Image 1 (cartoon, helix red, strand yellow):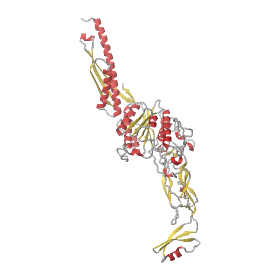
Image 2: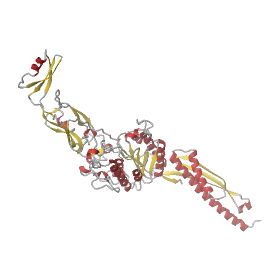
Image 3: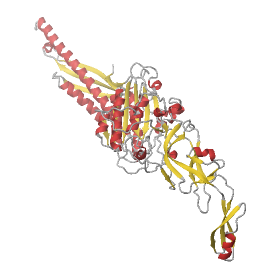
Image 4: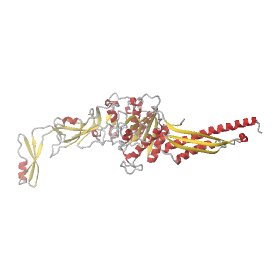
Length: 586
């Protein structure tokens, strides 16, 4: 017979071992479901691969404990609503208690893991330049189903799905998305329409590299008249008839019996273009007061030039007119072409300095990099971006010429969107407003990463011009993130109209001969530093674009390369899972 004291001691030893094994089993179960949930967030599905990762993590944590347990099982399952649950059991052999026929303890536990967030603001800065219309390998540049712009939209949806699964069901947390599509400019039109950005923040009198029309030559109207004449001699006599008090006559041509003469009035009727210098190309200040109010404005697009057979364009009042002020003459003018234009909402940046930024610090006078202050004068106001007002003269100096250049192509991008609350009640259905917004994204223009980051930070700044939106609700704790995606290196083009005008002749960012790539890259990293200083976590994705040092420094430790659409989806889900807080579910 076993002494009672030995039984008591043995029971204590075995119960202690059981308690240790139970604790180890619980810890391993927790580690397993955490690994499984993380794997599910990355892949977007729950299958054999995710189950294998969860099981491997369980095995690593439990078997390494050396408990001597046998018959151990672990079963992870997708419980829905973003929760991975698990059950684990094992048999732990006894030592002393075998003497009373208690050979083992059956131990079991349950565990669950979920992503759960509190309040999150995410500002997406999205490259919508022309190359986004192509497939990742550069082919089929038609914005079709295999294009990068389509893949971008799907990646944003995948980000939503992951975040929606992480939201608590009791409505205790808020998720908001904002968007800044960019190319060589950004579009704030919707924000001006809504009053979030007052129209007074834009210039009413705006300098542009533009085209002026010089109506300074008296116009004596003439017509070409034809008459049948039997000979060249008879034609000359008829064509050069003596002048009268109201007309003069001059020979034009004789062919096949048809004689043509010019009949010119002796009475001046208005003014025509200067025959040797009809056009002046230079920087001039144009009236944009109605344009910034989104009112349709008549813009001069072309004129008939004077010639031996045409009076050309005429006006009644002598003067030099720009493409907007000409409208004051339109009612009585002749020989001109115009169009009604409404500002699309894209902007040129406010004043800056054309020096190279160093140490991620914007020098004094670079108002474009001030992402906090509201405008107080024209130097700090933004300018309407309107291609029909801009003409390239191919030199910095003024050009007086007979060359009839055309206005610049405009590459306005889709409108930016302020932080908007995302309804996450359905983790499998993208909210209608978000789906509609993604539908507006189109690909066009050149790549200016700096302008994208400047406006992303500006719209997300808790102390800036959008502070009422950013701080809406006065929530005590908000996790703030900026996610930037591009498919190419920064690619400024001095001959393409952008937020900084025509850089080769306007020289707003770099002096003549300066390397635009270096100047804009320095501005890009400075804008990134400003955003981080505001308390935002920055994430950067190169889609089919290897990461440059500037991209990596923009988002230290959080820059990713995605070679194709599938990898891009994985990357967005991975970022979402890190934005969310992975935790054990009690």
